[in-house]
Structures are given as structure tokens and as C-alpha cells.
Amino acid sequence: MRFLISILLLCGLFGLNACTEKSDELAIGEFGSLTGNEATFGQSTNKGIRLALEEANLAGGIKGKKLKLITYDNQGKPDEAASVVKRLITQDKVLAIIGEVASSRSLAAAPIAQQYKVPMISPSSTSPKVTAAGNYIFRVCFIDPFQGKVMAKFMTENLKLKKVAILRDVKNEYSVGLADVFAKEAVAKGAEVLADLSYQAGDIDFKAQLTQIKSKNPEAIFIPGYYTEVGLITYQARQLGIKGVFLGGDGWDSNDLERNSKKAVNGSYYSNHYSTESTDPKVQEFIQKYKAKFSEVPDAMAALGYDSAKILFAAMERASEMKPEQIRNELAKTQDFSGVTGNITIDADRNAIKSAVIVQVEGDARKFIANIAP
Ligand code: PHE
Image (tube, rainbow, N blue to C red; front, side, top):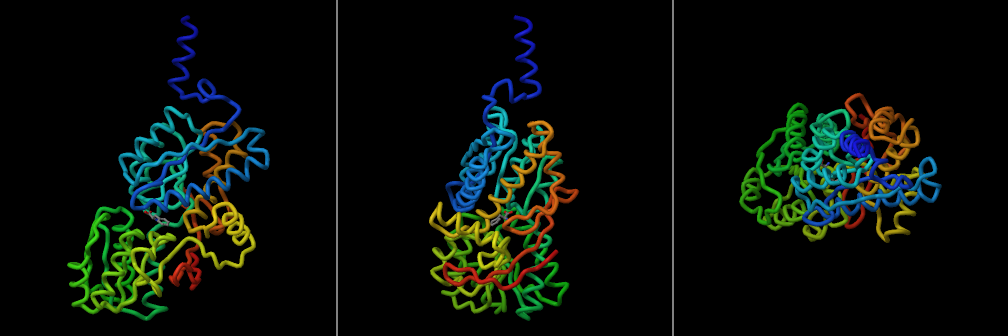
């Protein structure tokens, strides 16, 4: 009896998967916004991960074991993100976690993954703060200081626009960080920020801010927000007679962007993680496979979900033991991984060094404009 108790105690103390799990499957966790204002973020990521998982399992799994994905919806809420990540670790005993898209939710969950020493890979959170949460937290996308610079350079040098207004989501870590970098870089390149105003996710009426912006007559309006509000903002802006070019960041990327904008967002530019117009055969093959399975074109989150899963599987394949710590160590060694979102090398701060693309909205299509290396 005493022996049994100490075994159980050991399992609890060290979270040994073998004690509680069927050992014939390797459990991977995922958390995301499958519902709510940013539902396409979570849904697309999930589809990308599932495609990668299906391919890995068809090829025999990892070291002879099949992979199992456990996914929880956090409804777009940071506190829910933290609680489902705890559940993935303590109840489901996952080996690693993929998530989240939104920086605010990755930030809420990262301290838990770090505390339990389970590797967490964000496919697409770009706020620098995310990976600063600790040595178990990784990402496979670029960060906002780079993205903000890319858009400031594009506006001032390519479009030759110098008078800009900014409209940021003040409750969103990503939006605030990206707005700050963009403003600083734009001013350094000779631009003038005529107005810097804010809103909060969930708002539906932006006329007060837009009326102020209109009175300044900017040539460009930078809106570093998520697609639901960006759709409404661009629509209301054109209704009010605002003529400037709309610019944004990766948070625009959704097949639902046009829905709220009623075409007002057409012609706008944003920075993104990949282009569906890439001529790279690997990218086109991914798009074909994804379309065959889900009957839609994969957006950037789908592509990043796919790449994060593949990077994780490669690390698991290399790990000397199938344990979170060994998987973490191999993730940190990821170099020149040839993904659909570019070549991915994880640096000493567990961020990915890679290029950004600029796309232009053309209805449902995203026209490739430029590729910008770090
Ligand atoms: N980069 C955004 C963030 O950190 C999330 C995002 C990524 C949204 C990719 C859309 C596409 O919050």
C-alpha cells in the first residue's frame, strides 16, 4: 500500500504521462478561439493543425505512435485561455501545446505552460511579450517590431504617403504594440501622425473617432486591429467620406474580412505571413490539400497552424525521450525548417526569424505586393 501511494505521489509530483495515459498515443493540446468575434482565427488554425496531424499519422505517426489532438475553445477570452491550458496540462497530460493566435490570449496562458514546463508554441502571436514569458514558450511567426517597420516603410517609401492617422484597439496587446512601433518608424521616415485614436474590441460604432480623423484629412489610416472591427471601421469611414488608403497588420487576415466592410476594404494593404500567390510548389501543394479537405483557401492562420504542428512533430521525432522537457530542447534547436510560411529558424529568444509579405485586398483574393526580409 505504501509503495502504491508513493508511486501515485511521484506521478503527481512529476506529472509523468506514463502513469495516467494510455501509452499508445501521443497527446498534443490546442487552444483557440473557435467561437466569438475572432472565430476564424481558431477555426483556421485548427484546420491547419489537423491537416498536419493527419499527414503525420498516415505516415505512421512518431516513433511508431499515433498522434492525438485535444482542442479546447476559449471563446476569445484570455481567462478562459488560461483555464483550458491548465486543463490540457493537468488533466489531459499533453506533451506540448499549440496556441493561441491572439497575443492577449497567448500572454494569459503562457505563464501556466511555463510553470508546468510544457512547451507552448504560438502559431501567430506577434507581440514580443509572448515568448518573454519563459523558456518553454515559442512562436513560429515574426514579431510586431518587424511587422510595424515593414508597414511604415511600405507607406512612406512605396506608396509615398506621409500624413497618417492611427486607430488602435486599446484593450488588445497586439494592437497597442503594433501601433506604437508603426508610429515610431513612420515618424522616423518623415511621416506625420495627424491623429492617434482608440476603440475597444466589440465596439460597433466608430463614427466619433472617424469624424475626428476626417477633419485631419490623412492620406493613410493605419488600423492595427482584428478583422471584425476592421470591416466595420473601413465601411463607416467610407460612408463618412474618408478617402485615405487603409493599412493594417496580420490581424486583418480572415476570409470574413469583407463581410462587415461591404467591399469598403477593397484596395487596402496589410502585412501578412504568407501569400496564396506564392509560386513555391510546397505552398501550392499545401493549398491544394487544404482546399480538398476543407473546401476553402487556407488563410495565414491555417498555414501557421500547419507549420507549428510540423515543427513540433519534427522536434518530437528528434527528442531522446517523449517528454515535454526533451521536446522543448529540440524545439529550441529548430533551424531552417522549410515551412509553407517560409524558412523558419528559432532564435535564442524562441522567436522565428522570417520574412513578411504585403498583400492587397481584392474581394476574396489577396494580391501579392511584396516580400520583405528581416
Ligand atoms: N498577430 C496577431 C496577434 O498577435 C494575431 C493574428 C495572427 C491575427 C495572424 C491574424 C493572423 O494578436
